Image (cartoon, rainbow, N blue to C red):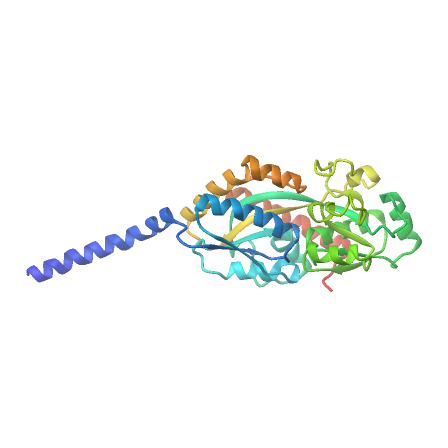
Length: 326
């Protein structure tokens, strides 16, 4: 009877410990390094801003952050890796409106569902793009570029950070509103596209403000406009596209922190609490703004609502522009 009583007590204690384990794990999280997947190449805006965020996360969590670049398929490859990763909070994603919205229409079928297979943590930042040309292009402003493209339809190409990215669709929106023809050359991130533009292999580029502005002072790139509805503080002399004679032009990338669906709510909440403080921290806030971004920091629910609204918006843009995956 005593042995049976001891067994019952031990069983009850074991059950209590099992019930307490999830709460203890969330409270102690993280207890090991966190991998942050960037679905675009090294050197591009997503990569640069992720590394700035990761540094602050390392300080806040006192754990190493491993930035893992997994470019390809307009961000779909890296996004799918996180969608299928263990839902334990140790694999995160910095993704954009390409893999989370536009690619549903652009690619037709994705290996993941952005609303079902991923759990939002927070909205990181907005980042407008810029329209720029190699100095050899005989156009010093947007009206001159439009005139050049209309005089030589289909003879010029533009580079972007990849199919479905905001830089790609910035170019497609430009073609539609300006009534011009250009060939699209996708790259694995803005960092890769800039190499060929600076080298003169590609005459025109739509890229993030961050990727392009480092080449402006040296004269290796001539910027003509930003793609947002208003001017960007980091490049105040550049006009918004609307100012150049293209009313209704407004397109910017947004970056969100995501986790695999099923990640415990308490871990999501802890991540959100820390990340919002980091994003709004003066040091990182100023750094993001200096890179042409607009820092945000939001609730997970606000990210979900944003994705729901952006899927039809970007889908409409893809269909109307005729954008296709090459």
